[in-house]
Image 1 (cartoon, rainbow, N blue to C red):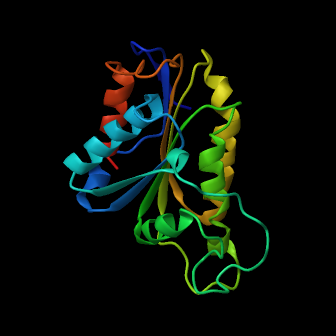
Image 2 (image 1 turned 60 degrees about the vertical axis):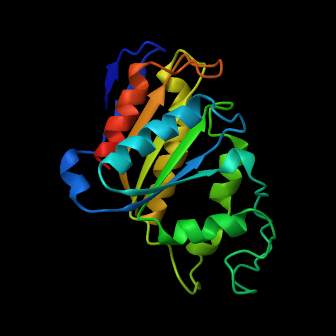
Length: 207
């Protein structure tokens, strides 16, 4: 699948990946982060990607799902009934306008129990209004990426999150532009100074 490279913080696995040739078109890129720990390893991963993407001329927004109040989907069936995608009153009201203007969606999360964090999963579940047959509008997103880091030494620990991501973007018809998994990082800032961050920046440049 992808090459397994060495990094100071531990191995990283990079699957697919963006090429510089794609960067000619300016895009609106939205990064959803999943950590409640401000300035943690996944935050640094997201910032490295964002820095590269901005260098390439893209517009980038980072939304910290891990530090926002976004409740889980209620399955109430009231999507769009009050004009907005969801009837719940929480921080998704700040998120959905960003989603609707994004061309590319990047998920960036620490590894929690072999998946993305619950914070990020709640935000993803709230995309349900855009997957209904009867909806006034859909997202303009056409591409996605997955960036993750975790304490595990093994790339296979990310397999569950990777499969959920693959199924989701397949359902939405989004193109997978790359996946980056960084292992053996746990303590806050432990990823700093590693080649993982440069690889994330490179992926941002080629987004």
